[in-house]
Length: 381
Image (tube, rainbow, N blue to C red; front, top):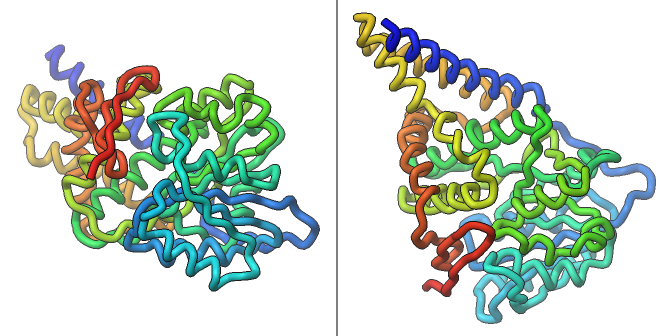
């Protein structure tokens, strides 16, 4: 009887916390709306975009970057290797949009084991404006991209970010990636911000350049293997906050394979493990595996139907997730619940992988991630 009660109470508590995180995220997130271009004079902005290789949506993301409704901005594209095929696409885009100030910088500044951060150094140093956005190349910028980032800046802000919202999945494993990015990771990040625990996300980062330069510059982001973890600690150390945009930006996914989903999620898990172990430890409880297992143990002890119990737990967990995605205009399909189930089946294995060493892949680099940014890195194929 005690086991039945303890399992039932714990399962219920986990399901309630899951629902609470969805409600917090739904309250914090705002419906997507277009912010008009500024009528009065606004600050000039530099947008630094690190690139490596040509991806499925590279042409479209480049076109979006040149089509922003902001009166004064410059684009600084950064590529580490001179033979990278993406250089031709960037050069063609710069020629196609001569009215938008844009530069292509090639070279690699090895300040850390983080290849993206190394690629951004030259762009940061070349930026001419006090407001600088570090934007991943696969972010699908809306026309009001700059407006949304600046609108989230407050007097006590040290950094504004946006989580990636997966869109345009092609195939089941891409839908699993959407389930990871949207109604799990973005949801918990917005719930955390609502509770005063804002974490940086490296997809889109708006910095006040004098603020960061006055506290170590971009080199300060090499203090951790992940630049967003270093950014979070730096901003919090200054007594400032990390804010998220009210409506996050899209990352179109295209096709994904299981190996790609596993590799990416395992890398992120390992990074979170070495940078924020106190928050990573309870992550295994955020999926459905723990509450479902405990509910089945309680049902078996009490003589309740196991299939009925499982269906009840699935409904309590996944229907609110679907409602959150629907209300915010995020991707949903008839396979979304199946993708969520697969995501939550993978979560315990990914969480366990986060506690162990061994190489993970980071954009073609084989990397062994250790605590306090101590890494071994060798170029991959």
